[in-house]
Length: 592
View (cartoon, helix red, strand yellow):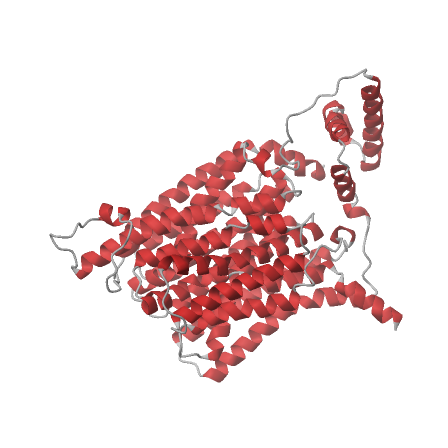
């Protein structure tokens, strides 16, 4: 009985079980990407115009990105407490939206709806924080793949929830809002005691590379399967039994990764190795010691050691550095040497948020993310109206498709950016520049409105947008450290709503309403009319819902966003140039 109990305890505390549970939680943490499916229901039920829907979209983006409270609560509360707060917010916010849309509650003013959308979507930040921070700590030397996979499942959540909703065949289109309120609540409550740091740096296995390969294979299979069944359901009229069968297979694919922790925990062939991550605990202990002198001496060692030391074997190098460190401690104690004190950490060390805010590299990441991801989020938020304007009836298909490409972009971004830094010791942001160039082409496709543009456009925008959320967190942790990663990451995510506020809330919605009003011939000499007036109008007129038809609806918006993505490419390349030395120091020596 005791061996079985030991195996079970090993299973519960296995870092791969935590990773798999975090993947399942993240698959429910992408409810914000369903806004393209939810917004047409809200627009028709509450008789909103596009400007008002865009305002709700900005509130949703703010809720999805303002995670300071979630970051600050990490450490003050156990992770299950952080997740529980997110669950309560999600259930309350979207539950109230469902009650209002279905007229079970009286119609509320727009500002109340914005607050409810904000509160509901803000629950995602708690899911993201708990999943990312725990898994990055459990896999400190695999940040790119771990972040890419976890953020990928968040992006795939829209397609997963849409397929589950299709299984119920609800004639009530507002039912998808109910599912958004209830589904994540059930999943997270079930798993919230599992997701936590478990000392994963001590659980390194020789088979870890094979385990990541298996996870990547499941990811590709899952994305291909979802894409296939979405297209089949779009082109053919399937009965409910077939749709239920498709959804059941989806659940099986989602459960497949649990095989890894089961094998590692219940097989006697797998033994953890100790040597691979030994330097990490030592670094953590030194950072937690709290003695400024120790930190300064360690920095001084880097300045005083000769370049020949790096060419020695690992054991001999450690001995030489230890000898030099001891001499510096003694000299400093006797006053024979004046230790240099730096005003702040170097890139690659642990920064506080205030220290990062005065660094140009941090703001290059922020504004590049604002232009790139902000323009992609504008497409995601307006996808329902974009597909309708081009004559497509089933908007859910494109919401699911961009969710799948978003997922593959995140997984691929983490994988390929890891190759860039590990194999070539080149700055990770070069992968972000490539992603932004792909998005620029995607926006141009949307502007042209060529046949099949929705399929090609969602592919390019989804891949590029998703890659940002695998590359940026990993790059931020490399340049500014892991100690305050939660706070730094949650600040960078503010670039998302900032971009959405300008691109969607001001530019896209105003141009859409202008073109819709122009097509409906609703202007008159007594009413001010024009694009500039529409953009500056503080309180949009409450008239019947307007719809714009044709490529003209998003032509100018897409061209503007394509140009902004090109500017983002330039900013990312500047960041690459500035951080070449940092990445060479971080990863170059490991290749010698």
